[in-house]
Image 1 (cartoon, rainbow, N blue to C red):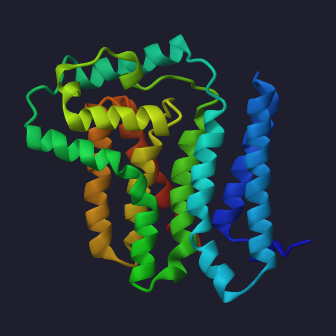
Image 2 (image 1 turned 180 degrees about the vertical axis):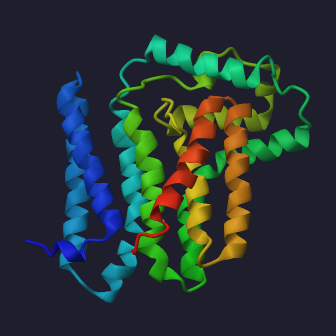
Length: 270
């Protein structure tokens, strides 16, 4: 047995998310190998939390400060097991929102420098989450660990959790290649998402929500870093749309989700 009061809120959220995935794996039609993958990931996360709680030491506490980053990564690929086939209805709905928000804009007239910046920032968006906590650790604010990871985990798990019910491909996987896609940076970006992502769309955008959540979580402790991360988060959201990694409605709702979670947690003691 473990003392429930010793479990951090962010750890409880991680366990709850994998419990959700385990239940959904029973409800959805999935190949048995994918179900096993989800359940194995859930067992791993529970084991890590139990060992962390039952092994109180300075070294373990330091590791616990970083463990949520691993849980989020495992959750991303475990959730990808639910993407078996896209829903034409969901994709059509997302594309209609793109038509309403973007119209006929192709962004061909963007300056090469701006396009390069947005591509590079988006390619490096996976560094935002561990990078945010690295700033906290570097500035000796590790006491904010649970609050930071609670905000960021919710901002990731909510978008991940919609994938079993809203299966869709990202725009880059559907739309024809553009002339600008022939540049070296764009070729690398498309290679990167094709080989390191689950190749499925999340609504809202987990990249946008988690990036902004990291910035908002930094504000109480390191305001200057929060501003810098906020600029990067908005750039990632814009880059995801212009680069066709996400639909416009994904990015917008992702940013709004991060603000909503942050506002809800303001008065919660962690």
